[in-house]
Length: 478
Ligand code: NDP
Image (cartoon, rainbow, N blue to C red; front, side, top):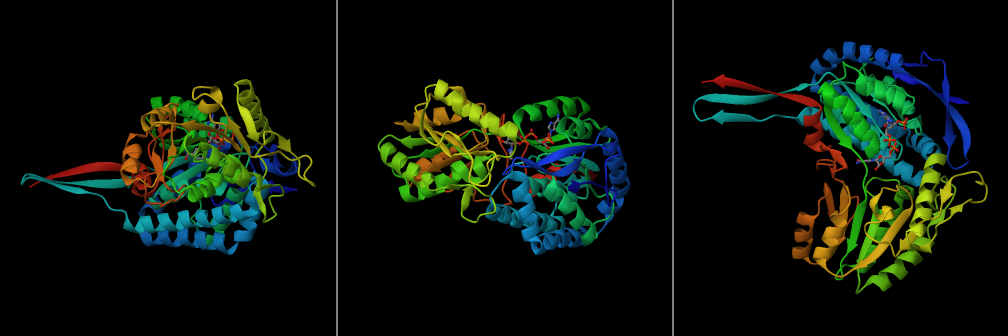
């Protein structure tokens, strides 16, 4: 059985614990590999390696960081089938989707390799008294903790800017989906990444993740995951005055106004709602449709979603794969039951399903629910599965208030051909990202992140480079 091991000080090694965790294939419900069950001592070991490696990495020419990071990207692309297959088996997502994400992971490495070469800081002339310039120096050793939904994509989204900015890293992928970070470690060795610059410690969040957050030498934490875990991390890191970037949960609205291009809106909404089994923090789980087009859009959406094939993640026709873990599968089904209790009518789906050959896997039908009030738990809490709630609305002001009326503020989507309305609504929505007539159209230079309980700070482009550097004002009197 394959074993997922740590990557510490340039070597692939087991945890000192000699314990192993089971790694499940969500499509079969069976254990298919073992994960080294690391602990705080492994984190210490990773930190020591990182601390030793960091000064040389920071002081290496930007071209060298650029070269190594590009080489890693190249090797991922060369092995895209192997990476995508590993991601699909580990996470449950369709293979074709995993392949797209592996390309995007390689692109993260390339994008921030370029940032290493281009990053600059500002200077201010203070009348004729002084010149101020900002020195942006590496932080030192940073911690990167990533979730299970887009495993390699979100792992590289964090470590790439950290590396580009000259930091060394102690990282922890989710224990539910460690496989591609493990393959990535091997690629780093091949690409000639200096030992200790990146360290990957596998294991449980409350053990390994928490040890990273608590470690006194690790000066900044970049975390993507659930809001409850984020709050816990903040409560540990804040009194230690660590720099924190938190990308957390969402309960994203998708609003279709009466003048929208309905064909486009429906086509995209199928993805907005159900891509990756709805396990994307940016998925729109609350769909609001203007009452004048409500019945028409509802019927057409149901027809389109009915056509999504649920099943074998390796089958290229599959659109909905398996839910990542048994616990999460139960949680999602629990929310469907709650929706019924809260007065929701299931228009489509609502059940678990066992495709032929995958009788023990964790599959849930794409589910559309109608008739829920804006303030019920189903419309307020993050479900993070293939479940959406749909409702009609009348007035723009009313829908802005409803859309803003959750504790979250990650992403919103609006559909309208009215330019003025689009700008006005975009300004009033309290979300870190507003998509107009599109969804998940990403430009890696833009600030990425959420408001309210969806997070603190922004990733992407210069925002990420700024997070992973310490600014110092140097003031020179003239
Ligand atoms: P979790 O919060 O459960 O876990 C995220 C990571 O944190 C995992 O690596 C986990 O380890 C680790 N972890 C768990 N407990 C601790 C702890 N006490 N200290 C330190 N680390 C810990 O999130 P999920 O993995 O369930 O991911 C889904 C969540 O992520 C959703 O809420 C989703 O909205 C959010 N998300 C947000 C995004 C954004 O950009 N805003 C993007 C993608 C997802 P382990 O899994 O091994 O326990």
